[in-house]
Amino acid sequence: MSVTVIGIESSCDDTSAAVIRDGLLLSNVIASQSVHEEYGGVVPELASRAHQQNIVPVVDAALRRAGIDKSDLSAIAFTRGPGLLGSLLVGTSFAKGLSLGLRIPMMDVNHLHGHVLSHFVRRKEDDRVPEFPFLCLLVSGGNSQIINVKSPYDMEILGQTIDDAAGEAFDKCAKVMGLPYPGGPHIDRLAQQGDHARFKFARPHIPGLDYSFSGLKTSFLYTLRDNCKVNPGFIEENMADLAASLQRTIIEILIDKLDKAVRQTGIRTVAIGGGVSANSGVRNAVSEYCAAHGLTAFIPERAFTTDNAAMVAIAGYFKYLKKDFCPYNKPPFARVSM
Image (cartoon, rainbow, N blue to C red; front, side, top):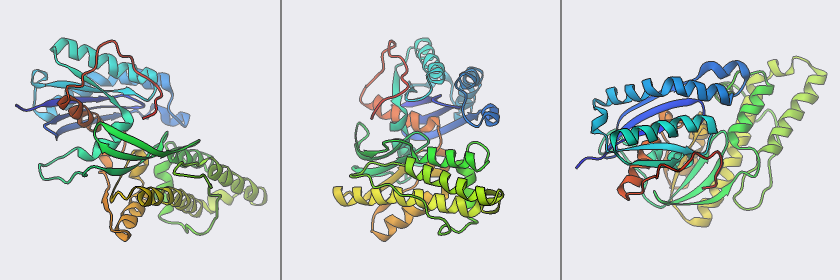
């Protein structure tokens, strides 16, 4: 008997719903919020209000595009955290109401687990998926982690950021350069036109597999401050080179720790996930690293790098197979370690 799961994602500023049947993606609908652009970052109260407006039409669109009725659903998967509490509350409450109304079980999903398991979303039966165990470099606005993925239910963090994440470094540096929010994609675009060896920024010396990007961010800000004192037009004149040098430094930091993890574990399959895995420089660097070392690489579709419900649905599908259902009294959570 087929298992049809609808996933609901509302952890930050994207409202998304997706339908998966036996691991195959039938639909994935995302409603983004442009209201935050003028503020230079996500405003939690505005985000939760937008989720309230978007969630019913988004779920309806996901069902229609999948060609199914809500009565065809076997279960509901939803992001319970981490994320913005107000935003999570909208998705959690909707999932509980739908579950009660349809009398079908629901599965709560850790947002970070969803990013890791996004590689198991298949559009066709013969789509390639990783074999266990594999290493996942999870890079997003709030998280930079290296994870030993032993199974869909067993993940071990080998290293993580002790301060800023890679995505934060991109966005905060972009902001002081005067680039629009979110800054990461603008840095990526400019970096393709610049000289990545033009500027040198500080690199951390953190033992083990943990990351740190706060020193890089500070070094970048000092470079701008010192040069702008001499030349007020420094940023505008050197925008592409600054972006290219910043992106190259972040990539080198990420790859250095990934290489250490590969050597320590002996694992030969590497995947990347999270919003920063949409960055063309990061994608190319991981592909080139894996090719040079004879490793198998899994680079996600860009549609599955940002916050999306397809990854929630597949994570929930795995939990459904174990009958790991969520009781109705579980609240959303803002922060948690994997």
